[in-house]
Image (cartoon, rainbow over the protein chains, first blue to last red):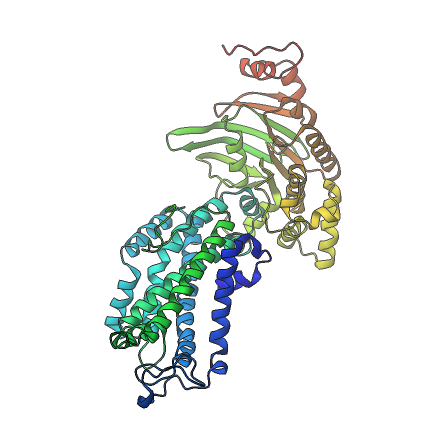
Amino acid sequence: MTAITALLGSSRPNRWGPLGTTAAIVILAAVALSVLGPALSSADPNASDFASAYAAPGAGHPLGYDGQGRDLLARLLTGSRTSLLGPLWVVALSMAAGTIIAIAAAWVGGWLDSVVSAALDVVFAFPGVLLAMLVAAVFGPGLSAAVLALSVAYVPYIARLLRSAALAERRKAYVQALEVQGLGAVAICLRHLVPNLIPLIAAQATLFFGYAMVDLAIVSYFGLGVQPPDADWGVMVAGGQSGVLQGYPAESLLAGGCIVVLVVAFNVLGERLSDGSGQGGTFGPSRWWRPRRGGAA
Amino acid sequence: MTDAILEVEGLRKNFGEATAVRDVSFSLPPAGALAIVGESGSGKTTVARMIVGLERPTAGRVTACGRDRSQPARSARERRDRGGQVQIVFQDPYSSLDPRQSPAAAVEEVLRLHTRLDRGRRRARVAELADLVGLDERQMAALPSRLSGGQRQRVAIARALAAEPRILILDESVAALDVSIQAQVLNVLADVRERTGVAYLFISHDLAVVRQVTDDVVVMRHGAIVERGPTDRVLDAPEHPYTQLLRASVPRPGWQVPKTR
């Protein structure tokens, strides 16, 4: 949500550069397509017609059919909804929890700060995907289990960065002036601290949206996230595998391509936003496509 | 002195092993103006931070308007009351304002906290305070990034005065300003004192400024007070060698770097 508000709310898209603007347009287009989904394809994404399995594109079915004779365009569009809503939930939950934890630790300091830092280090030890699979294996597969587990796994990355930013902000004279005025801690945090951290929060949210998308797709690919026959890009990559062996790679390639394009777009935009947020390097789980820069800010 | 509006007794602050402030006592009469002078690291700012409650004294008492404030406030109401007694203006004009808040909004926020004025009256009071510190309507509506250091410092003074404090602490508040702006702000301060009867605790290393603004002075070195008295007397005829050195360190025609010991 924050990512989208940041996208729409910024009055100066030029500072993102051409690449950042392109990324923003790609993301907006994906959101528009998933919202308009049913209007663009009249086919039922879950109706199979085995007679037309792997059939080539034709009238009314511009992308053809998958191995079970389902319309690929309809499935891609429907799948975009779960593939975008999942990460949105992950980002919303982990950002909310991370921000609250970070600000509480930075404001109260002392023992709370030590306890929080230690707890975050423990959670750091679990890779997000692994935690999500573990939770799905224990509580049964499904999107909500994966979303919850990933949210927990992302909290330390977000909380650690925001904590140092909140600490720096807390030491500024305007915050201390408000303390001397007698304004309560909660009011100072909500009215002054958080609004001044919003650029950083938005940048992190955008970046982590991309991470969450890949991680949720991985979980779905292994059959622990969204359950077939519901459409989801991760499920589609997995479902299209047999097609790849038989010379019909369309399903896996299309779904995988959608994931790659969007994740790159979210990464590029996240980087641009964090460059503009006035804070040091961003900080997230290192990925094979994006080695960690800067480390902890 | 029981009629003092601010009374500091035996104040001490340790940071770990180091003692930043030791056995500092002074008092400030209502509508008085007291300076604390001393070099960087002499503990003057720590004293100010203890008075406003941003640092907790290791030992000693701070009494403002007859109420003890050595311990953290227990209730929201007490915290607010303390804010209405003592206010502070910090040294750095660039971090002293919320970058997302216009001066008018910042002053209004303080008025909402400390008074029961309705919207219209708050707006009138904001205009009054802006006028007092010499800021126009356009400056009050601008974001801090569009204001100069001097203008920001005047906003910080207006925000502090909005709480109608009996005591205003100025912690090197004019040190970061260039000389002409400094003179303007000092005039504003003298004017405000005359009109509102606020008492000043003026923390500075600038002896010329101290002479212009204050009645009494205490000289601090290494966390302790080494000399005290009426400003003119202390600055004209310093008794303590350190005060003599401070005075001799002010450049003037034919001046040479004084020998330390």
